[in-house]
Length: 511
Image (cartoon, rainbow, N blue to C red; front, side):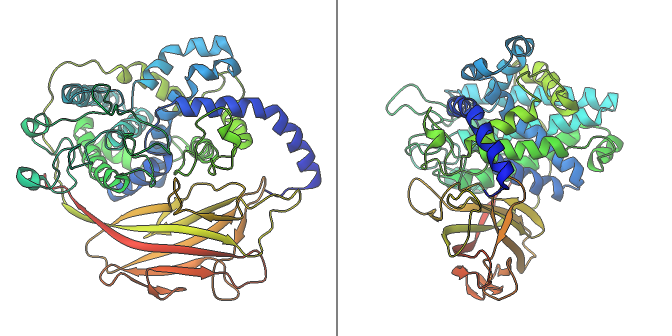
C-alpha cells in the first residue's frame, strides 16, 4: 500500500491509535454469526433486482440496506462496547438486540424454522403495505434489502442444501418435482415440515453451530466459496431472492408504487456513501468474500487471516459512524433501518402464512462462475515503505460488476491450499445466451490511488477480455482455448501471473 512520505508518517501514527480498535473489531467479528459474506449478498441482490427491472440507484440502496442487518449485529457485540460511546449505544440498545435476532440463526427444529418464515412473511407483508400506502419509497427499498438479507441467510446458515444424511432430499424421489435447488416456500408445507431442518443443532453429536470461515465441515455456515455446499446455497438463495422480490411486489399491492421503486433515483436518496462503507467494512474485515476474517484477538494481525486489513477496518467503521457515537449523523438509510429493526425486526409469530407464489419462470438457470486459483507476483512493487503486495480484483460478467475479497501482504498466494478457496464470482445467465462476456482486472491496494496490475499476455494491455462459450466450455479473446488457464502480464510495469478458471453451474426451482 504505497503512499507519499508525509502520508506514511501520518499513517504510522494512525496505525498505533487504530491498533487497539482493530483488535477489538477482530473480536467482534469473531463473535458475530454474520451470514453469506457481503459480496455474495450484494451479487445475488444485484443479479435478481436487475432482472426484475430495478434501476442502479434502487439496487445500490437495497444492497446497502442488506448490509445493515449485519452491521447492527457486528456493532452490537458486547466486546465493542469499550470503544463506543456508552450513552449513544444505550440509546439504540433495542435496535442492536433486534439486529442480532435476524439471520435465521439459532433455530433448532423444523418447527422453529417454519415459524420464523411465517413471521417474516406476515410482518414483511404488513410493513410493506403500510409503507406503500404512505408512499415511503426509501422505507420500501430498505425493507426489501433487509428482508432479502434474511431470505438469503436461510440457505447459508441451514442444512437445507446439504442432502445426504444431514439435509432434505433436494431433487430426489418425491422431491424431484420441486427441482434440484428449490426454495423453502416452493416446497409444499407438508413436505418441508416433514423433514429435519435447522440452523443450529445443540442436541446430539456432533453439535452444529454457525462456525468461523475456517471451521471444519460440521459447522453449518456456507458463507463463502471455502465452505462445503456454498455454490448450492448460492443458487438456492438466487431462486429464493427472485421469488421474494416477486412476492414483495404483491405485498406492495399498488403497481404505481412498484414502478416508482423500480425507477428509484439518487434524487430520492443517494446510496453512494452507505454502499461504499458497506464494501470497505466488509472488505477490510475479511467478510467481503472469504479467505480470512479475524477469529481471535491476535488473528486480525496474522498472515493467516489473509483477507483482513485491521487498521483500515477500524478507520472505516469509525469514519462510517463519524466517530464513537452510534447516533451521530446516522443518515437517512441507517435511520430507516433502525426504525425497521424496532418494528418489522421484532417479528412476532402469529400463525401460518400461505402466500400465493409468483411465477417461477425461468425454472432452470445457468450460472457462469469465474475463479482465481493462484497469484504470483512477477515484478510488482508495493511502493515506499516496502511490504508485500495487497491484491484484489474487479470483474464484469455479462455486464454485472464484481469485487473479489482482499489478499493482504502476500506477494504470492495459492487459493487452492486449505483453508483458503478461490476468489469466486458467480452470475446467472439466460439459457438463450451462447457466449458470456467477461472483463477481469487485478488490482493492488494503496492508501490513496489503487494500481492496476498487468495480467494481459499482449503488450500494451492490462485487463483480460474474454468470451466464455456455454455450449463448448471454452474461451476466446485475450485467452483462447480451455477454460482453466494460466496467464501472465507482458508489459513493462507491475505484472503478475494468474491461474484462473471459468465454468458453468446449473440449477432448477420448479414451483
